[in-house]
Image (cartoon, rainbow, N blue to C red; front, side, top):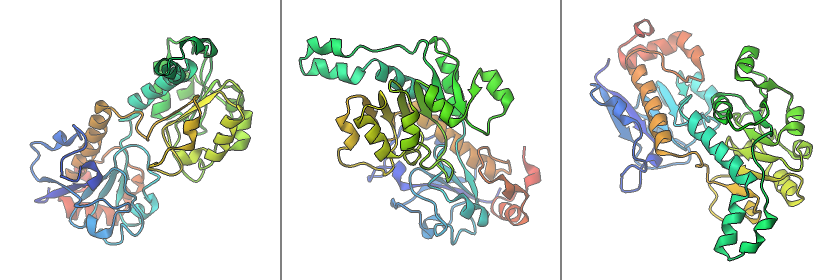
Length: 352
């Protein structure tokens, strides 16, 4: 490997005083590895600028956007690693054009997001927020107005049966639910059969499911996927849960559906415009649970995401193909292979 493989973290991993915001970012992966240098951006910017990338072979990104302008001068940059699995803030095409790998931490978020989803399913059906308020406000006798229901004999509908959706299916075994259904045209039939999941159209899922849980990426195909027409198909006693991306759901349509009691409730971890710094209009509904895009945040989540992101950078530094690459076609491009050799001293043939 060349004398130094520099990995930079965006500034939003740290407080203004330079101390890490999170206990474990997985940086222990680099311990004892000669030639790895870990640095951080000096300031947070909503969009990464070219000067912030100078001198780094890899950058691990929390929230800033990576645009074509970000990559206008990245001769020594090999990879952008998103700290998570969503990549709507990364211009993958621009990365490919500039011989930069775009990577996500595939698999690291599956368990915590699936657990959080189940927690929300139970909280919604048992009216936990409303019952909590009854005690806090001394309205004990109003409890008869909030009769809940169980998960037993109800149907889960999953939009996007990736790692999170599959983990959710596994964790829900034992709750006595009906066989789950899913809308995901990219999942092979043998995977569905192994999971015991029935593949259905989006319309059938919406009309059948008691819980509609969104776990797909945000892209040109899924933006606005759930609008007024789709919400109108849902059962009046069904719930919508979104732990994916806000742009997938039309918020005005969802607000109207809740206001008109067209569905039983919702749980939202993400929104069309983030961050939210004023009270959100959905807060008026007692059958809606909200979180600031962090419902699945746990110490284990950040540890596992960090370890996965750092391992990908480490693999890259020693000539191994990292996991979670969104543009693997670069491995066959001569200009990228030459860049990899120039930066690391390794060729692709050296991968272990």
